[in-house]
Length: 207
Image (tube, helix red, strand yellow):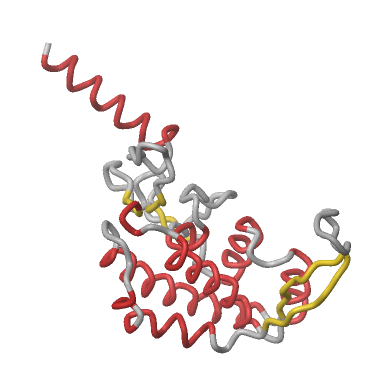
């Protein structure tokens, strides 16, 4: 399965972008997480893991270890797609908590810690800021920022406005943040234009 250079980060939400790491941009499945190299590339492009942390992990571990965690990432993606597709179209409630147990189990293994640092933005009263950082002890650590993005999806997005692209054979999902909640396509330049061309052909044929 060939992997394009750039992932399709079009969902307006990183947790949904993770689901879109499997797509059909040209009618055939493309998996950005097919192997460890693809996973590292996707994480770098999605800016979920600092570049220096990715470089350190790649230099430290064998490719087979990255391939192994890529397999876990695909399993996580399959589970989260099932959750999203079964809940999209209506707001989430606390009744969803039981179904989110696998996500909470993964989050419980995370190794994050806080630090007080100089505030590079210059905001605030003291010139100091509190930041959260992560220890990258193993390749499994690469799953934690993905889990965090998924957690933000289920806690920050209105699932009533999580939608599937209306494009033919397109499997991409997105959060509709437009004012009128009228977004229909993953991208106007891809599925939107294809739909316009198809509609034009139908009109010409009917004339």
